[in-house]
Length: 235
Image 1 (cartoon, rainbow, N blue to C red):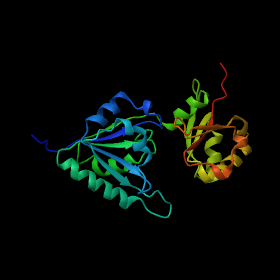
Image 2: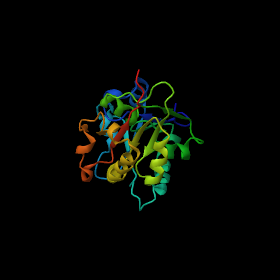
Image 3: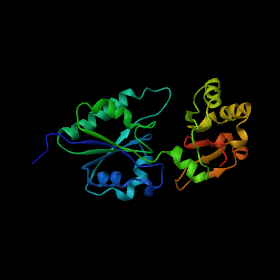
Image 4: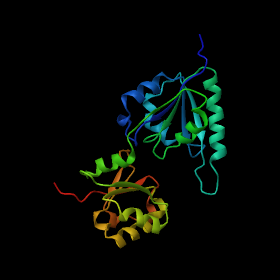
């Protein structure tokens, strides 16, 4: 008997290491009829799929969801199209999992799918290991102690906003570095945080790279890079 409608799942699959997927996310991934995942290039499989490729079964239907992720292009029509595509499968009673790097509700693409479909279909979000937490782990630096205030800041913000946010934090992680690296470094130096800053690219992925921040080439900083400013508290 076909179910009236399928269930939609947003699966956090972690920052890159396939072993960092949770037991629950793995179970749901392998039991769903449909596996959907974001791609930024129509000629490539996408990072999310590559993380869990070994877990996907041949009989499962795979749906790449194209999102251009370009400043000059609004992503909203692409989210609308993705939601419409997934709704067709859900209406047929098929369960759909959407793969999300890191955590679905932490700067995750799935949030936009959720906003369009959660009021129409039963939906569950499975949290995942964020790259911010994974970065601290691979760098070997505890992020926070006791009552520290911790912030996560996108590097894309203007320098004055970066400065204001960092000035009130005991510990911080700066994400989405890319072409904003030099701006961020300037702010860190102005606030006296540069010596504390730690840099990592593609944490837990096969291409992971940890470099002393003063040896980073600004022209080669990828989008998936992070600066960690750990707590100063001493036990």
